[in-house]
Length: 256
Image 1: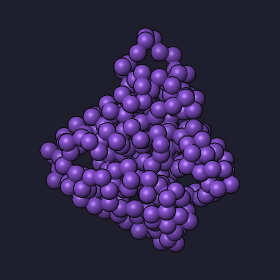
Image 2: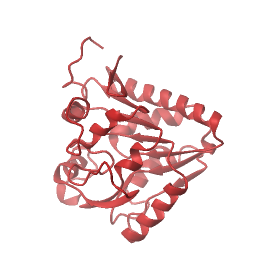
Image 3: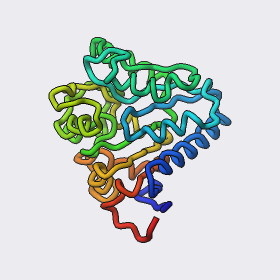
Image 4: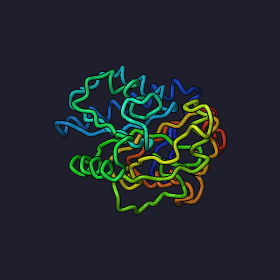
């Protein structure tokens, strides 16, 4: 394992995505337990993507007082109802929401009226601001569904509906979430960038060769909406976990 810092953010790089996921889960569990020594309950936001598989599987096995944690997720396709097999809420329900006894789980209903659902979910998060964000980075550098074309570091909203760019939609095909580009929904709900970065802690888990260019841009490029994930370098509470493939375009001074 190699550990370094980019801006204010700590970055750990591992030989395998399995070790990456295990360590991220171990660290996250420790942060959860620390927070629960200070607060009676906490609020955590999760990301739905195959990149999170190893992390979520390991986190579900950690010794955590789940009954003191309220769970949310950061994005969802417009038009897919709760429980739809290709919805993000169903991905997370299978991966962790139904596996451990959370105090509560709040799902974005992609089939609901978009304006009403944004109002509803924003009210939930305004009443209970997130303590920890568990997230990834997209192939185009997006965080949640804040693609470069719609990213706003100063967005006044908590959640919004966006039109997804083609690179983002192609990633869903690369991840085997949809068979073809035409099958991928064109719009989605997403928590905004301020909602994600205003949480005290972010755990960003990013494995895979297809993420290497986005990781390099996020860690070494200009901090701008052209690579939304670049804003994470300014977050003292953010930790990023990479495997050797996603870190392959970084200049690493030593072997892992």
